Amino acid sequence: MKTHTLSVLVAASEHLDIYSLTQALAEKGISNLIQTTLDEEQIIKQVVKHGHEIVVLDVSLRSIEQAKAMLSTVKLRTGAQVVAVGDNREIAFYRAMVSAGACEYLLNPVEISAFNETEFQVDKAETTAGKVIAVVGAKGGVGVSTIAANLARELAERGEVLTVADMDFATGDLDLQYDVQGNTALVEMLQYPERLEPVVYERSGIKVSDRVTLFTGYLSLDSPPFWPEKSALDHFRKFSLQHSDTLVLDLPSFSMRDQIGFSSLAEADVRVLVLEPTLSSIRNIGQILALLDSLANGQSDKINLIVLNHTKSDKASLINCHGVQRALGCEVDVILPYVPTHFLTKESLGRSLLKGNRKVSRAFDLLASKATGGDTTNKRHRWLRGA
Image 1 (cartoon, one colour):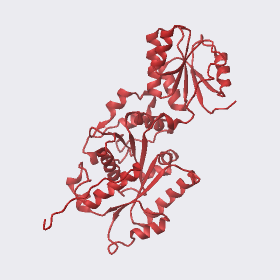
Image 2 (spheres, rainbow, N blue to C red):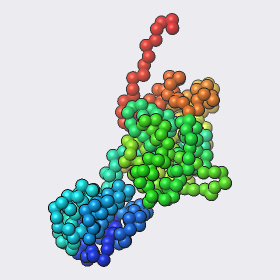
Image 3 (cartoon, rainbow, N blue to C red):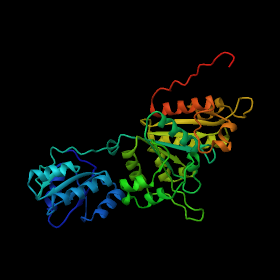
Image 4 (tube, rainbow, N blue to C red):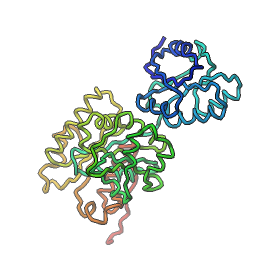
């Protein structure tokens, strides 16, 4: 018999035969069971906090409408697999449970062989098909927010739907990058992840364009520091990927000192590491790369992309691109030039930086292509002689 590490939350009334359910799950190789009441908010809170993959929901003595409403809510707000157990033998009730999202509907008491043909998803990653791109800098001021905002713009131009989250709750400025009004919604969503549902998610997001939605959590300077629990961040990530193709996380450099912050980078599908051609920046990125490599053990399917920002000509720079690559021991993937007239003018706030400078445009085109594993788009221009 194969043993599973799946965690099961049993939401039951006194009518459910717990012993028979336990025996049936044990026959499937599942022994990690936690029991709770049938209170919807308590069920959702337990799943979000402890990461239960399966919820066994007792729908005994409930009408079809009541059972469907409860099952749909639990399924929608947790993303867990739901097994409904009840006492209604009608085929219409079974069909209603399946249509509401149940992977199984079983009669109480549960037969010992009830789960023999049931295939539970062992890998959580299979529940969502989206991609997470985490952008982080070696230190503050290296252009992480600018790169995250314009990478999202480039991906949106290619047809992707994106959620962008500014994880710097103290000094974040993605709202300035997009010329929108930030809010505190992201902090509230991460403080109370069990309250996260589609309506809350849609109302909290700031619509930048038809394809880009921004989430911010900007706190006042006198507010106590905040960083979310891992379970809350995981729940937000899963929820975001249900509503978009890609989630872009703008991670502050200080979060790399925190286990939860670093895990956000380590667990991302694409890690964009931004540095400047300075000794401190090279050292910090080198440390992050070493930590990522130690976690991978040479068998990671994650993509690391190194972006060298603020690069000048070899004559004007004390450390050129070749020197950065030699110090890091690996190649730089994308080089962004130092163009103050393009990035640092008052007109640049809130507008796309993908146009107006060919080197910058090509750099973001290359970054987006490497992040998605696709080809660069054809952005060549036909120049007229004498123009």
